Length: 256
Image 1 (cartoon, rainbow, N blue to C red):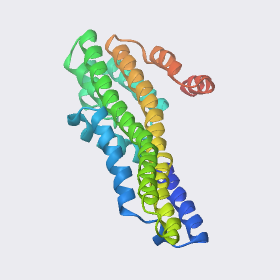
Image 2 (cartoon, rainbow, N blue to C red):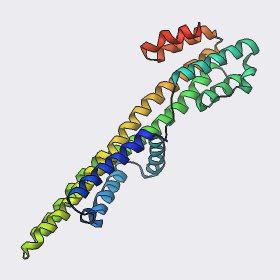
Image 3 (cartoon, helix red, strand yellow):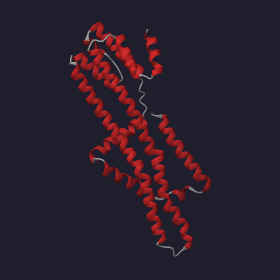
Image 4 (cartoon, rainbow, N blue to C red):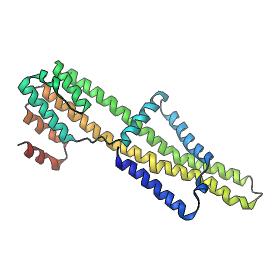
């Protein structure tokens, strides 16, 4: 699990709950019609923006990636590719039939090399798999952003509806205060949904998408290098370009 994502949402909800408890009861902040306006309106706007068939899978994939912590470590990936190069150098491509790795893209590339596919086919296949995965992940990120954009808007719509209803029935001045409070709840719900959940998750997915793109491209270049018979040392020197500058020298010195 991604502890940072979960902790952020829990702490944010706790702070809001603490603020509510200081000045009133939780019951005063619960209004079912306001919840329906914000969530229902946000979902309706999202359905309009995106193809219906792709919303469910993209939403599930985005939520899974946002709440799970798949640690992408390019240094470990480079080391695994170098090991592949050493295996091919000693045993030939068939030696990769027993190669084990927890990275699906790298495992797929090792299988392609072991099966004797040419470099163009391997690159095209791995790039297609990468692009499809990143496209689905990007769609999930856009869906969460859409919900984050729609939440405050429908919160304001709900508040306006409540105010119109309140102003249309002002025969009882004592009821104006409670009615105003209920009308403002939709704005609160929309702001919380957008700024505590949807928009932060969209930004988290955007960051993870960038990391995945770098890692998958690194894998593709590494597998092609192995297929072309590049020496392990040259492979390492080529792939360290994907690392931050301060890690270049340390990895090369460690290998030496």
